[in-house]
Length: 490
Image 1 (cartoon, one colour):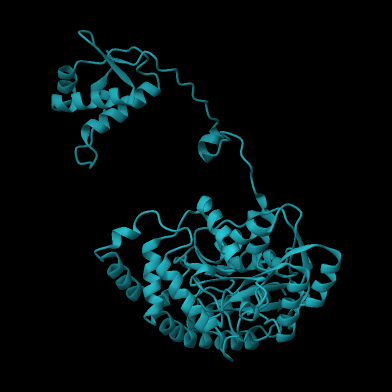
Image 2: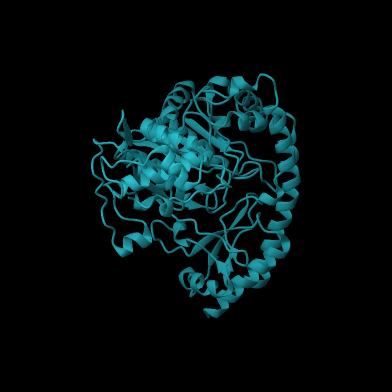
């Protein structure tokens, strides 16, 4: 007889019912063929006595196994492992496969170009980022109170089911009013789709605009996630120069005469990664070219809210009278990356098609979170938060640039950014980031994947360094570690 008393282990303190614990262990025995097909199981009283449980527990266990098809009851004979169960023939894993748990179970397509792995962060290390907000400044209490108030409404059940793929209607209405007022747009409800952040908007746009071998134009330095998204669409990426006035639109005009350009991606407010602003002359030229050659402008306005020397420059979408601009933004960088609330703005037919596509990609967003941010924006809490952090980030920008000048001036060149959350650092020769990145780890400083700023391997020797997410004392530590790493390479 099978040693049931020895094999079965029951945890009477577990929240899982005893009969379920028994059922799962029986299933494992059957799968391992320790109880082969047609094996007779003990009677309910016998097994109850062996395991010191109530007979009803065993009855419930056998009923569960029968319902799942693992056992069958034969009148006047007993309960047996089901006779029609096929044999399990699990593959014997090699030692390396067992250790890594990464044996190839089936064929699938890989996307090696899709990028970086996010490693676990260590508390005593300093990590350079390319410009993110300080989540310690997130107005968590205000957002939580708003969320609880929204969730506590009597009729909230209406928002808990499947709703519009365009996003929550209240948030769309609030954003229409807010963006028209703050960005100078002239949109209505038909022109907006709520997304899960800017990247979601870039992806949806790329899927609708681009097919294999279609041409999309970006800067020679560009936001790497956008590049990867276009590459995933199998589009041909053409690159044009970027100088102190942003994208060189004369180069774009030359390209348009040679190729059928489908789309141009631009971060007009603060070019990513260099932080320069697209000049008024080039903005007008770009819009005129879009009209003349019939391409879409994908305008990613990722940090509109952060300007330290002047009022925000209105987006291209504000001046677009021909419907060529797809305007993308979010509150993720403004408040905290965890709040995946963004928007896609375009003419109605494009928004309608994006909503159809969204149905099979994401279906819909978090309605409660969208309602929360509708109230958060409408109440003025978002603007209050922006005003508070603007002062903080401006102070951090000034301190960061002062420290770079005084401590690293012999090693790097840079321009003080007028806005945003990062500085574009050019490392002087004969230094290079490859050696410095390795040396920096000796001082518990992680520079990260600096090669992403030079996807065409032009060797411009620049990286983008964020300042907004560091407190003042943390900026001193960052610069000190970076200086040690650079001087160690001298």
